[in-house]
Amino acid sequence: MRTRFHNPPAEAVARALGKLGEYGAIWFVIGIAMAFIDPDNGEDWLLAGFLGPVAIGLNFVVKVVVRRPRPVLEGLPPLGGAPSSLSFPSAHATSSFACATAMTRIAPEAGFLFILAVGIAVCRPYLGMHYPSDVLAGVVLGTALGLIVPL
Image (cartoon, rainbow, N blue to C red):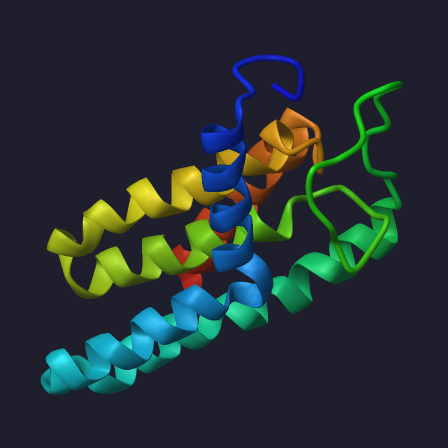
């Protein structure tokens, strides 16, 4: 993915998605916004949004145990930064799928948030930050977290 379909506009979109996914912050913001929009489920929305940063922390524990380094492609440096040199699993994918899954449990019509989750996850190997298997593991881990969080 790091070697195909690269042009300045596509790379700008991928970088923007990567920034949105950092630290699970976009999901926390969505959770807060939805708590105001849907106050009857406000606590659940806040919990689902808070799951983003929590998932990042849990993901880091797995990274430390696995210790897989980020991909290195000769002549193709990564197009983004990361707080760690560890790759497996993708924290962006983990937090995005955890939150999208939890939020869809609150309101099935929030399923469109999976579009954002997929975009954030796919941008990681595109930017050269992760192997595709890192993202797949993050999707599985995040989906599991989103299903087990008590809402």
